[in-house]
Length: 361
Image 1 (cartoon, rainbow, N blue to C red):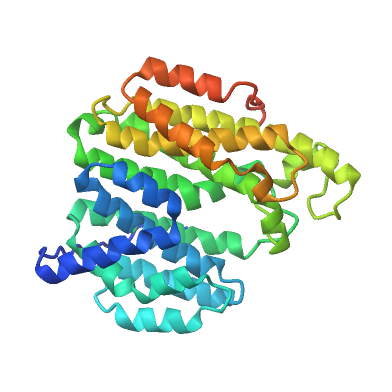
Image 2 (cartoon, rainbow, N blue to C red):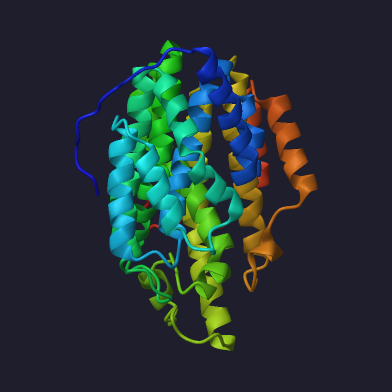
């Protein structure tokens, strides 16, 4: 994981050229994330640009990591250069050309286009406040510093332990929760009053969302010879995650999944506590968070009801469920009591976290 580093804030002025860059920058988002293209516009205007920029930077970091044909040493080098770039290194174009040339044909076209537009993304980044730039830089530093460590040990057999899964979730998602909290606290003095309580909750929030995706995408990851589930949880049920698919595999796998759903469930409870610390009149920030929580809970319900699923598509929530989640969250967003009731109803029947499984990274 990356250690402390110097940070060079070079804040730009919103001249006409930057305004044009902002329009191009915002147009990139729907191509790489339909979900965030829906949720980010719920935020206050002064947060939308910073959060969009943060997502695009994280997506570029993921693009480097996800390219199966890019050698590990090259990934590490690109990650190191990207940290320096986001930290204030001024020359964007050589890095953009080098990374664009290195990406394989397996990389989605939308992500190749995003990398090609990195000069635009960085121009917008330089227009953000120094506090916002620093929050984004720390996130990229931790993410790009930590992901290669896990990439080197990726295998179909899974991570060694629940502790390693916690660390992985922190590197790819918990730190994003911390970054968003820094942005929210910088935006609102009322939110900043709860910073010390919200920071650990934000890490759990990120882990809950990441674990939901890991569970949903298990079979697709397995086809890529990757697995982010912890071996120790499944060993208790007599399963080696690297073993061939069989009737025993399905039975034991379902028991391990049951335990991990319980962990993710607890993390999403923490996420609800996080939301309730946001002032009730900040309905946009609340909606931004609530939509993500609601969709994750419903996905966990689908996995819980169909533990023998063989594809992520089988447990993906419907568009109707997405619309219902958004609508209910919007109506109830101001009332902590109503939100608590809605969460209990949505999560009804989900497993509880087993006492032996820790969630703190």
